Picture (tube, rainbow over the protein chains, first blue to last red):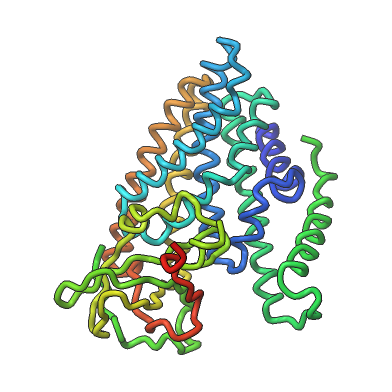
Length: 193
Length: 177
């Protein structure tokens, strides 16, 4: 149990997808102008990362590794990511058209989010069991959502603050992101996973 | 999807005591009696609008078929005409509830099923099968949750105002074709 907790803390906080691995930076800067959109995007990404990680783990274990097809890994994973996003979109649309109308906007953005592919590739490096892989993917995406929401909250406050004209807009956003990354470096003492 | 019944309604969108709204721009594409059908405008990762056709930020989500699938009805008490651009809104709380229902609920059920399977069997194959079954069950639960929210009218966007001059981007991508 402790092993799983350490794995999740390490994935969510210590080796945060955005601030330590620098993945998914486009949505980090693009969809964090409001907290509610950041939460929507974060939850959609969490779902897609977890589902695609399950599929990618199965592909790796039952297809790529036994048949020595490692050179097809990136292509296969990209296909799996696109398929999982499409699956999510179709499912949400079938399950509830109103939900699809409200949330469908985030789904196509996830297809091009490198964090989804990055997490799957990290699973392979880690040589994890199925449950470890899924928990790692879930925790990574929770870390992604956490940082998105924190950053969106900071940007909402920055919008009300008096910022020197030279720093207004994206520059102060980048400065804030770097300070947030420094703050997250504090977690590196918890675990080395 | 239920038609929102508060086209120009009781709730004043400018009242600070009302819950915050997430606003979006939509275009009226059809009017059928008292119902106006709207399509949300193209939106991209940069949160832009109609001008995205020019800025190179177009993605998979901007094709016409996708917009058509997201067409939604609105009570036409404001007397909207085809081609008009309007601002519609949903409450932030509704967006959070919708996100939780669509994404968090299936994941919670999936992890619950996976944890039980791992505890009982301890095998990767069985855990995987249990998690897939849990995901399906979670999506079913999400469907019930969405129906419940929808029946209470919480997922329906409502008309706020017609777009004013200078509101959002005013560039028509077709004029550059």
